[in-house]
Length: 349
Image (tube, rainbow, N blue to C red):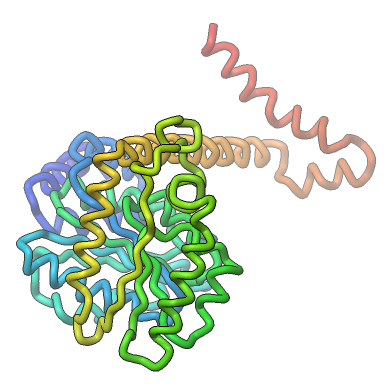
């Protein structure tokens, strides 16, 4: 991608050109040459969108709820971007489900931009490109960005690092309550939604959730979960003040009928206000950027070291030497790292 093409895409995104936004996200997802420059150029124009993560087990009704959320946001005059992370194809690495026709309520509405992305094998269900796609949608001017995860149920923690508010869906009578305890997913939710609340067992599921959240109260709010794990809150004395704590709420919905969706949006708004007023929004953003910088450094360093391994004939050749007792793993590691270490030392001088 030439500098002119990149500049045209950035201009198009900032001017609200949906084709430019779609092409930009495609280049981001495919990690095409120049995609990093695109994201860098767009970064200065971000910071206004609210990002909402929606997670939960398969079959809980995430897609239907996200569809209804987008529709209600539009009713309120807000623009919406939706990123639906799909399981990866073992053959192509692409999204198994492709651009699904599950956002039926918003078909033809240009102010709802929907994109399905492949998880590309990431354990957390969110591909590396998802954060960059959020940057593009934010710079484009979307008011709300909803990220729907794969829904593996066990490894949804990545969404915590991406979203301002995490919504965890549970369906009645599925045993999800037990699964949540096993997976620890209880700890990442800011809001819990008992979807399909017209089914038998809904009240029991709500009661179970209330009990589990109550049991968590001894360490809750700031000490545990989304507000504690992986954040800097625990280091801030002010975080001990109960007034700064957020008590996760439980909302009942029947997404297929749109019942309870307005209550959910009100709860999301309340949580975002809490983040903003308590200073947690700023702290969470700092933590997110710190993790992103470290992730990029690790990724780039690995790429450099893989190139260096190739210079030595590849990992198999080095393993042969170690297995033949001609050298050892520590010596090999030093040999591969030395050129990079020397380069860093020279740059410091």
